[in-house]
Length: 487
Image (cartoon, rainbow, N blue to C red; front, side, top):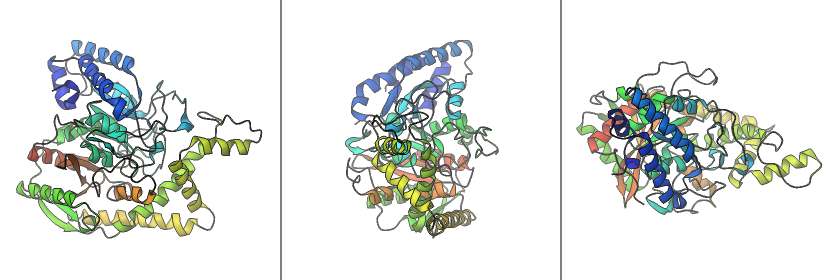
């Protein structure tokens, strides 16, 4: 097995024993990038020279002290919506052409401080708006299992990079499923933490009340290791929660026997791929054989989640993206225009892609006079009802099991002309962003060589249980470590 195909936890152990060097791991990763990324298109920007310098620093640290932080020397890819000092950050959009941040996002500072090696910035749907990583200025990221299929989105570049061995770990963001859905399509583990668990400072905003940064790894253990580094209160982020941060990696050692799982009947209805449903049911049986009690629950307002999400998210996007005007930074129209209003219009028309413009217009409409109460305010009330559904369910269960996606990865271009069908891809992930809860994708089988994703949902700030259950499942089914997409 190549070093780039191994789990982060295994590589960290080998580094501490002096069996390998960070430079060797990093060179293995960039060799794989050279071999596969011309096809997969997982990266917008790679920074090999910087990565090798960081690897050499990590190796020097290990020569002095074997007890370095666990992330030391581990190559990590960063989604291109997360600011990186001195490295261009584009959000896969023309409007941020040439933008190089003068500072790091808090999550980037935290992994650098722990000695991680940054490999580059990964491809994504423009500003995080999409479920397939097809809405990118550099073109789509392809699924490493079958390059005729999408990788999912919007963190498709991060999920593909990890699945294909082009990174050991990756940072993604999740506004409506953008970590969990591509993780399901690419066969990786991916966690959306509780809203407020991880700082959003330096993350370019799409929908501020929904966005959250999280880890993507080859195994649940890998995700726990990265979450340990990036979680925690940040005074630079007003939405960062001042709550206790447990040792997530250590918490995986606790037994899952005796926990109670909830199966929401609203998630197992017509429209769910039959094979995915069978895979989830088989996974539930495996849990039950290992001491978990599974019961049916109800989340009655689930059917309103997609509609509420696409009112709230687009309204916030309309506000957040108003800052891109061609004056302060990024793209500005080359047209010879004297009137400033016309310059704004031309810059935004030329700088934003079709899907971003669609969502800005929808969001502006729902916030406009006469429509605010009818749409935006009503959507916020639905959001509260969805959260109440989860609160009531968690009075009776410790965690919830659902599919991550309603179907398997779809063909490139298949849903681009039908936005509604694309939006429905996130039907099982959106409710967690509306309610702020943590959710983890775990690979739970294969159908015709394509991975199937299972979603594990926990109470607010109970990532410990979510990760413990996911790790327990990987142990029960002998999944996880060393698995990658051969393509």
